[in-house]
Structure formats: C-alpha cells, structure tokens
Length: 224
Image 1 (cartoon, rainbow, N blue to C red):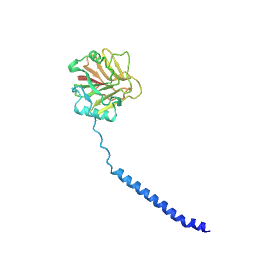
Image 2: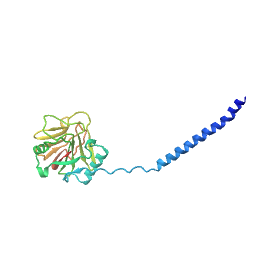
Image 3: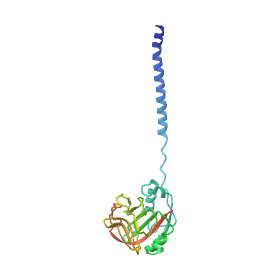
Image 4: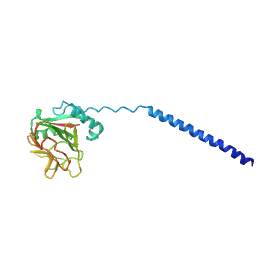
C-alpha cells in the first residue's frame, strides 16, 4: 500500500515537471521565431548588365534594361546565356544591307544569336536563335528559339511545340517560325523588306505595326 501511495503522490509532480518543460520549450521556440522575424530579408540584387562590345544602334537603354531583367530572372533567355558577352558581328549601317554578308559574318560562330531590328515606323523587334544564323537546306534550331517585340514593353513569343520550324536560311531570304505557309519573321536577301505573320511555331502576334515592313537598321549579336 505504501508503494502504491508513493506512486500516486509522485505522479502529479512528474506531470507538472513535464508541463513546465514543455512551456519552457515553447517559450524558447517563440523567442527563436521572433529573432527570425527580426532578421531583415536580403535585398533583391540589381539586374546584371550584359557586356556589349559596342553601343547598339537599335536597342536603347530601356530595351537593354528589359533584357537585363530577363537575364537575371531567367524569364526568356536561357540560363546558359546569362552573363555572356554580347559581340556585335553584323550591323547594316557598317556591313551593308546584304543577307549573304550576314551569313559570311556568322562563319566561325556557333551562337546563340540575338537578331534585333528597327523598321521605318520605329518599331523594334527580332528573334533569339539558339544557334548561329547560316545557310541551310531545311529548318534548324531548338525550342529555345523565340520571337520578341517591344510595344513598348518587351513581349516574347516562345515555342509552342506544335512544329520545329525554327530557322531557315536561303540565299534570298531568312525565315523564322512557320505554319500554314506564313512565317513569324521573314527577311529578304537585301535585308530591306520583311514580313511578320502569326505562325504555329510561336503563336506570335505580328511583330511590326504592319505585316509587311521596311528595315531601317538590323544588328546580329552573338552571345559568347
């Protein structure tokens, strides 16, 4: 009987000890939580500026800044190109309005390439190709290829997966994206006239203000 009474009288004390231990643990957890809440969140980093070998005659500060943000957030440009040097390999104001000259300037480069242009209406648009622009018998490229326009904010039209008509280079024309006989972006052999139509490859809008346009300036940047 003594043994039973000892067990009975000691039980409440054990419960109290346990509860007090739990209360102490809760207080410690609350203090740790308050300390964690008191630590300020790290400030977001500023977009990393791409390193351009020379000034662009097409892209202004606002457009480059939008590309910077895309590079940092990985929204559009593939992560593998972030932080790469932008090398201007072709510019119509220096190299002339010739598609064949563009192909020659691309020799020795494997890409990727950012093709940007401004038409005579002042609209800026272009394409990102996962590989260098070149002559080809058929379409080439990967799903990283996309079309874009500034209207005035950057709008990107990515691969839909419906077909693989990314890039095709003929002697007399350059085509990017296709479907139902229309091209998302088409440029003639003189790099003077072009066209843009909705296509299945990118489900894009017309990149220019009109479906047919005249080119004022065109640049090809290799991201190396």
